[in-house]
Length: 184
Image 1 (spheres, rainbow, N blue to C red):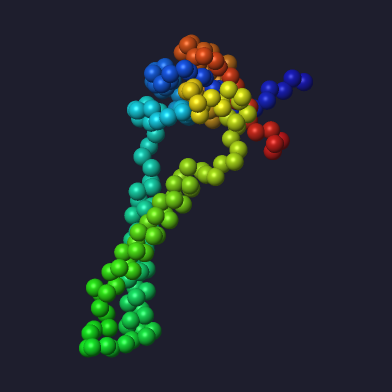
Image 2 (image 1 turned 90 degrees about the vertical axis):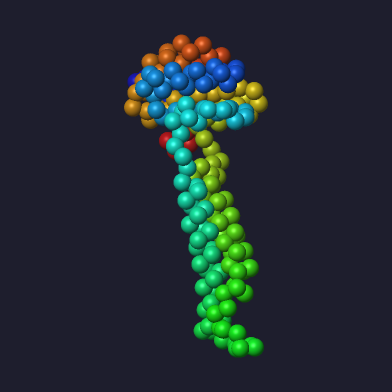
């Protein structure tokens, strides 16, 4: 019984960013949507060509900042008005100008922590393992090569047709990326 092993996708290797962008354009035109590109440095217009949506990170940071601001203010308000009211010099118990430094600092602190945790969560990090790490040529993605991977979860994906399609784009090489065999 000859069983075909499941694969994560098909990976094409390109030598320069222009070839990669042309390959992404042709893949999108051919109907592929679940794909990703890997480059050693940021390539202008590549996210737009891949159809990457804008992140929800700014909203996460805004909510974190608002929570930090409200926490800083109401913590001081509660202490000054309810927990330990101290009338010194006839000032009002709710002296909000005195609350500004701590409120500001907590706003920045919670917004920054939200940014870091939100970025990690939205990027799926930490990711100690990815199927692309099985491909020995993929190490060049951090040096001088550009890769396009069409994932097998794409509706249009067919193992042979996708490999043939990527081969027609004149890459340096095309290879299949095996799925994680540790869980099998």
